[in-house]
Image (cartoon, rainbow, N blue to C red; front, side, top):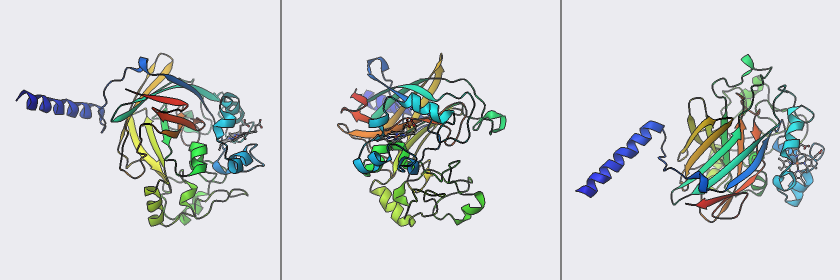
Length: 339
Ligand code: HEC
């Protein structure tokens, strides 16, 4: 009797927690003071697309990245502050400068896991508002002061695993140098361009991607849907988790032929400003059978990348990490310890 009652009570408590957070994951509390901290610096990437990083005339590291098998982080880990300064001031690869914007954001990251979930905690200083001259009221996304996103790589494509987020960022994406004119978008097949632009995608989903010339990328060369779907099931995707601060919305999506912000097992973010810093926590189930989700396993290391849309920005006007390694009870830049 007591057992059944406790069980019922347990279910009721879980249901209340679900209702309160509006999310599919009800998470236990984590004692973050016991979890080791990693530090990194997110930087302003400007218009440095996946085509840009592979082109020698644009990028000093192109050959080493494409031919020698180097990871971005091997050359750039530690110099993100200087790099961000170049793009944010328009010295390099940035046409739409936002005056006064910071070039980089230091971030502290903690990760831990138990038998069911991965838990992460992000802390970074809030920035001053610097109005974007090209956005109404200076704010590109007036609803969200910040957004935080994490990509997780399934580890099936070498270039993707060595570059992280860059594999999804193309020269013909929104506000990028080769973005197709709105009246050309009707030619798009197999992707949703109703927003007036092409979202992130992976080269795997295209029959060809142009690396150089005036129109780089492969927005209009989407493979047939059945091929893309089969490829996603085989791991040709990038898992994408995102928190939108304004209305406290957590999204679990993925990128393949385009960005899809739904369909995953679910994720739950919570965040608030504590003094001068933003503190955001995340709970995500380790395992998942949903297409577009990486099923995480203890003992393995994954390539991950992080982005913060600071100060009401949208689209490419964000700060990003270089590719990082997240080890679940394994080695990595971020070592997730088992609870
Ligand atoms: C072999 C080393 C190496 C690798 C690997 C490498 N880069 Fe670079 N990267 C460079 C060099 C050299 C420059 C030019 C720096 C300069 O002009 O001062 C550069 C410049 C950049 C810049 C412009 C900012 C700046 O400081 O000039 C960005 C952004 C960038 N790289 C991103 C990447 C990304 C993303 C990857 C992985 C896809 C990558 N790099 C891989 C060496 C490398």
